[in-house]
Image 1: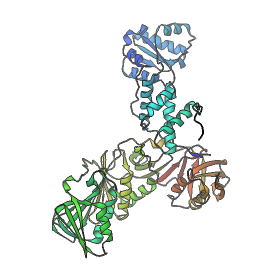
Image 2: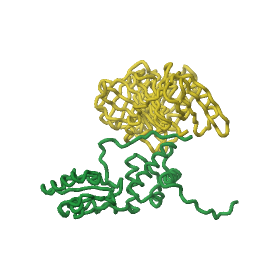
Image 3: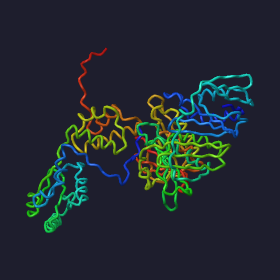
Image 4: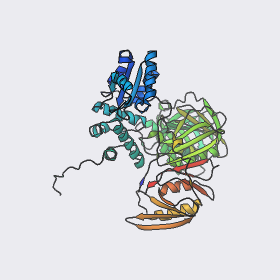
Length: 208
Length: 375
């Protein structure tokens, strides 16, 4: 039997959420600051789950540059079309977010409008960004990752926003369950927990 | 400096301050206590580890000449301990030495100048309130066992104190190590309104609790800011403990306190404790796991160990919800059960993987949350 950890959350309500900028999303941040250049004043932000689409949308709306509609792909298409029209009439830039890659639109009018808009897609984080993401998630959880963690984790971690978040959560959980600092054995077990066990190497050393 | 003190007074005072001093120090003066003799016939003794300092005043039999000096805390304590009971101890300093004389004994200890002795700068402590020493002692006793000792989560290495305005204004103390959580709630003392959230470090808690033991009848004055806390205790001459606070954010612990656990188990905490203790005899040292099988009006405690065999015990209980099995660390259960000072304890359970709420009853100031083990 093994101890289960309390689901403690360190982050307090009211703490500002952070967006880690890197190769996968820097072009998004740049484009959001120039809504004047968007075709028909509309941009569509696509990205995988947990990639920060809602944070970008909130940030854009809070910046006062225009309106943001988060999860536009889950909205009623007619309602969305009306909102698009209203934004056009008022000359207000409109940012829509949707899950990558497939946002299939049935309404032909809406499809053509969205098709003409600027498409921004959050890409795949590179090593540097994976490292920054791991650090940011750990800092948010009040988790000390231990020396050499990034050198070990970055080449082995899944190149995806949700996967990186799950990995850090697993390290946090295992370290809390074992009441032990996050070190190599915990990094390894966390990787195995989120990605499955590592391929065993053939043992060429003859047994002594 | 030259002063004479009764051995008992010196010993009691040193026993209070010496445990603040770490056994190993890279900065030599941190091994020392500061002794300051004033003309009025009083002596001040002070010890620090840079994060925590304790200052105690004691009455001297006589002060022939005032002055201040620092000398090894543990040596002076050990000497005072071994001096004959009832003796008068004379302390005299000269040329980097302190001479300690009592009866036919004579010691000379090296000293370091008082100016090098570090003192915690308290700064402004805008929140001030008084709390009965007994209440503060109970608050500590009911929570400290849950303080984490894992150092990388430094923000769990203490007791979290915060005020809250609920049905009535309260002050809450909480501690957790990620496996269990203890919370103690008291009426908000006058003056605590608007108090910043603070985390009092484990060592300060331990030293404070020791000092409280000798002055349980009085009140304790608490003064604090977001970075420092000071406890002033009455008693002879008084003791002042000042500690830095842990600079970190305590988790939003209220979110792990279950509110909808619908399976209620009521039983006698003593027979429960004893049963757990007995079956845990054969549990492996590493996990200490005990399984609880809940059934109509009984709990079957059991342990199965691959090396040591099996054990089981039935404990009568009040239980009418659906039967199921849940596992706990025996030591955690015992820690919590030994806090319950009553004939019944309530366990509010949900399922084998969910936090379990343990308390004496709905009105008790102490509340515990225990996370189960995977069975």
